[in-house]
Length: 436
Ligand SMILES: Cc1cc2nc3c(=O)[nH]c(=O)nc-3n(C[C@H](O)[C@H](O)[C@H](O)COP(=O)(O)O)c2cc1C
Ligand code: SF4
Ligand code: SF4
Image 1 (cartoon, rainbow, N blue to C red):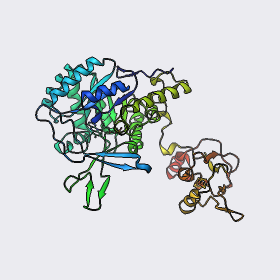
Image 2 (cartoon, rainbow, N blue to C red):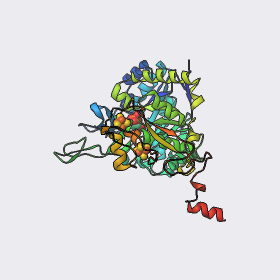
Image 3 (cartoon, rainbow, N blue to C red):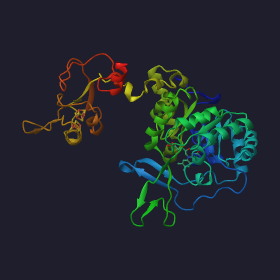
Image 4 (tube, helix red, strand yellow):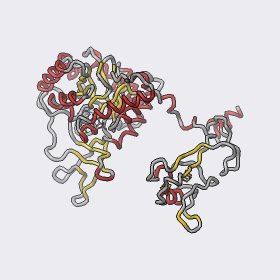
């Protein structure tokens, strides 16, 4: 059986599934129930400085985007960091770590961007016996207005400076949690590395307004007639998170920097995708908030079964396996030609592929044959764009098939050799290069 043991930054946990810093990890009661359910580790809900705790709104703090059947695909929140007393949290962390020595406990932190504030809190965290810290440079609402969270994460110099302070006053691993609310995630990741971070984790939530109430014309969630932007997470953000993860994994300057992947992870498959893009482990929030702690059990058995099927013995064996296959558009093989193919036995004749291709693609699907509904691809018109596959409601009914010989659309032979845009005759730069 596959070994799911994770050794992220030398922190051992029985599996690579950690709960992300959020309501599921806000107190000992939650964390211990999560461990009982099987979670390998947690990042404790973000702690702030000593003093009166932050205050949350007393009205709705969540909004959501739904798919069919009210299936939750995106969650928006305006919650702040923990609103519980610092010392209560530290005491609980100490006790839980003692009771669960085989699970990872990371303490998430967000204090003012001043060396004294970090110097004050880090020894207190060190005393808890927790395995490491995560710097919350990502919270996009409330705290950022006070110069913390995303306000730090958006300025690489601040990231580097605070990370350096943490490495100075804390002896265990320091993970820098990045905000996606920036233009190019490689810059904050590089800053974290330059500051001495042991790893980065991403993504925190994305700035969002998920709904406007059209009766009172205010964003949802609405607090006494007003709303503010929140942080978006859940399955909808997974593609954005995976792209950012892959950018860091591919970047020469950060290649090899351990990554903890976060964003929309709901199933073992999501986790496996993040790991193959370079993550040493993964963190989950929305899936636990939607389905409860036991969702981890499907993740564990699913990942283990898949690894067995593939003959993969350990997590480390497939970390980053997909990274070499992520490339820039200009390196894609322009001689690779595909055509859509409809399996007539599976087709339910709904006509979606026809409408999509006829109205917005290349008029490459028939809708009638001998006066009857019939959907078939016209190879002479098909550019292989995949849109029909994406809109067809039946799994595997339309497949994309690579062709050789002559392309009926262009009438030209399909060149079996790899060739990309950098050498294509239509590329003005390629011509310049060739002329030089
Ligand atoms: C209600 C809520 C509160 C959160 N609070 C924190 C927090 O205190 N610190 C933090 O670093 N991230 C916080 N997050 C962000 C999550 O840790 C995670 O980065 C984000 O939700 C993306 O993961 P997901 O798609 O699995 O939910 C919070 C998320 C939610 C939904
Ligand atoms: S792959 Fe694109 S062009 Fe070809 S049939 Fe489908 S939608 Fe039309
Ligand atoms: S979308 Fe799929 S099921 Fe519907 S007509 Fe096209 S091939 Fe058939």
